[in-house]
Length: 120
Image (cartoon, rainbow, N blue to C red):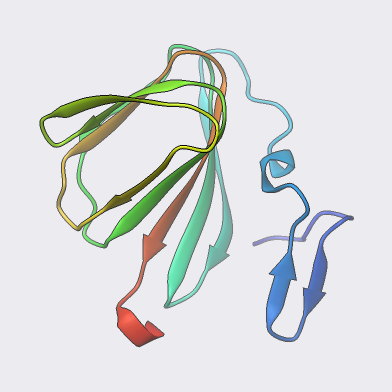
């Protein structure tokens, strides 16, 4: 992560963010923006902001992943399933699961790309 926000608390082995969604206060119209929060061998955490109507077409990830929706509402495709997501929705996906996201309104979502067990 670049410089932490003013309200972040950091220590030798932790980062405390009171409201991770506030790392991205504005999402420009007709865009998808992202900001890497953490990038280490155990986990890569990326905050996404989707303007209403924006989507990530179906794709796969080479690592297990978690989607955690913080704000807004989206349509999800997970394999053959079509589901809805809203604030608090949490999805764990194995590697290579085809998935896509379409924002119905402005969405903030955390993507956690998980490393191998034990971080090695």
